Amino acid sequence: MRYVKRLIITALVCLALPAAAIDLFRVLNAEDLLEEGIDYFEAGDYENAESKFKAAATELPEGQESYYWLGRTFSARGEYDKAVNYYNYSLDINPSYVDSLREAGALTMQLGRFEEALTYLRRLVDVTPEDGAIYCNLGLTHLGLKQYDKAEEQFLTAIDLDTDLARAYDGMGLVYDSRGQLVAAEDAFKTSLEYDEYRVETLIHLGLLYEKQGLNSDAIRYYQKTIEADPDSPLAGAAAARIEGLGGDI
Picture (cartoon, rainbow, N blue to C red):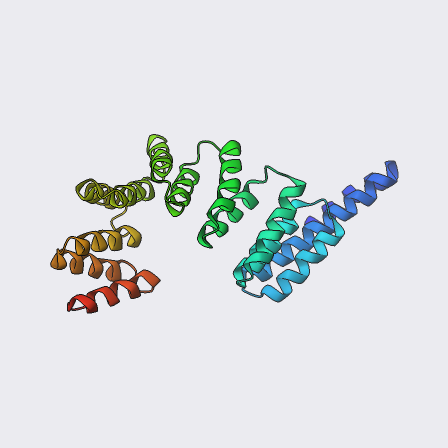
């Protein structure tokens, strides 16, 4: 049915505006290629996904989505520099394209390229200022740069927005921990767990906080909770190693 409708629309445009019909053909072809590429991407077939997304970009070079999905594809394959480059191509077309700003900011933050991450995240705040997750990412980025006051400001903004509270309080715990305010850090981590009791990041942070203070039985208990919350998480492996180092039972 979708193709029938497209044929009807295209025929009508061809009768009236031949130049517009050519543009419509390009748009529709690019959309079809994108849909096929997304299907391949979701199936984990990144080679065919790349081929479709590149074909869509060739068909409609002014389309931002093709470059965004190429970024996603290269990121999924672990080719991170190429991924960032494609996100930037997308942003050259539309500097306010939220999906590319979000993915580029998150990826560069995970790679430890904190100054670069800040540029994307600040632009993202301008576009979607009510999204608490962005402020949490800004807070974590400032933590990576050891800018603790700025990190605190961002986490408090997320808390004020009443969004992403488990991450925000976990971030506040890290800020307090970095300053040696261990009681405040413990309170913030436990508040985080009130919003998400299975948040593995917070559970292991509490374990590390207790271990730092020599409270090994408490540390082991939270490491065990980390493993129970998500046995397949990389943090579960880290927690198991900490338990072994403390002589506890997994």
